[in-house]
Amino acid sequence: MIALTTSLARELAPFGIGVNVVCPGPTNTPLMQEEARNNPKLVERLVRAIPMGRVGEPEDQARVIAFLASEASAYMTGQTLSVSGGLTMI
Figure 1 (spheres, rainbow, N blue to C red):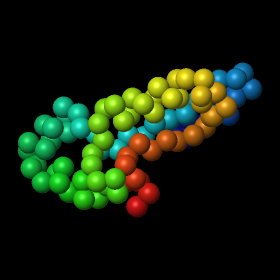
Figure 2: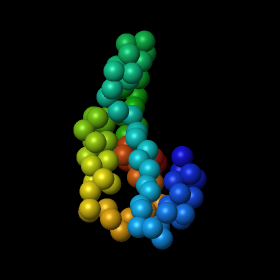
Figure 3: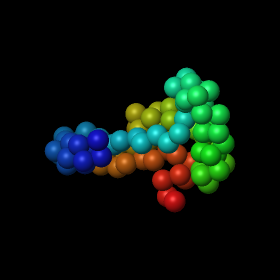
């Protein structure tokens, strides 16, 4: 997805079209809750590994996506945004 994003960003930039990608980190979704039921220590281990000390909420992802859909990101293209509470910087 990242390679596709940068390729499309390069192709579409001359037309004023921005292409960016959001890479979500561990997020409190029904799938995560189901996995946590099968593995009770999963969320605890994730929280210890995430510098911000919590798993993400769907709203955390939505706010970044809303920013990318807004005029505030009009001069931004080819970027990868990790919304993971700092997990990917480790």
